[in-house]
Image (cartoon, rainbow, N blue to C red; front, side, top):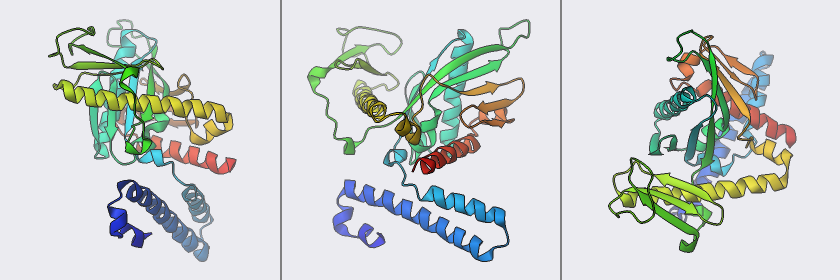
Length: 307
């Protein structure tokens, strides 16, 4: 594999090079896990270490989803709870932005509550964030000190890239231009920079208004629309394959309540893996590493069990 990655013919073929790079990373991780397991077994004095290294080796044997290395497109919508739900949705957006910053990734914002996290492995880390997030806290407008419950929905899907080979015919897209400050129509002045694209066959919509250049907004909007179409196709395919396959890929139902953020008790609970952590102040500030690691391990072990 190392020899192939040094081959000029491979270096000049971007698609092939990326495929080999992913496979090489998988093999290196597997090799490292095997060495650690072998050392633990040869030593034989620490049963707990042997069990842990065996579990890590089993996890390393599962080939990664190639989508995991892609950028993650995220959309956060306020749910039940009125103004408090909107504030919570904004808190979640900041949480993910700060997590991305801690990983050295960039965040490209399309519009309020809609953004792309750009960095290697972004989708692999954030794919399990999709679902309904519930918050319990005393709103700043609450004079009686009562705890209110509200919710926000998070949608996560991988960004499209050239390997998807998806081209959308012009006739299938309606483009609306409008002022970045508010809604508009199709026939407004072309100096308006905000762009909304609608995929007519599916009704899927993408909007971008955070760039000053209309052309840049068009490019980002088109890329997001492609990602939405591909995500729809993948979910339809998962539904056809059946519930077992959906569980293996860890797609999850977007309407499912996955997590509760209890501010008075400084407690976060992820209901899918029965994980409770009393460090909500750190987590809401972007310290998601422990939660993401536990989720990835859980769903990887679920894959192993199915296999």
